[in-house]
Length: 94
Image (cartoon, rainbow, N blue to C red; front, side, top):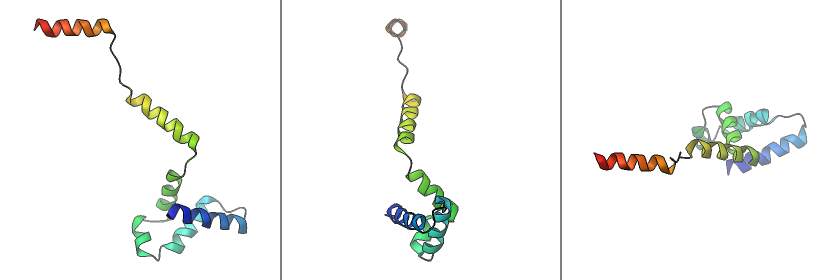
């Protein structure tokens, strides 16, 4: 919901002034909305709001790359069958 509101706000700001950065728009959006206690309670300041918006709205390419990287980190190593047999024999001998 907030992300959609911010996107609309950012697009309006971009139409009014082409040189407005997303960071500047996030800062002004935060200042405008911070009078709402519920909104202000979610973020400490404009910087944390901006970081939150950026982390929520990343390109699909970056998201896919992150997923692949996480899968590589989590992928379990499988022992070769001969190593499994040796370990099983060792356990049986005990």
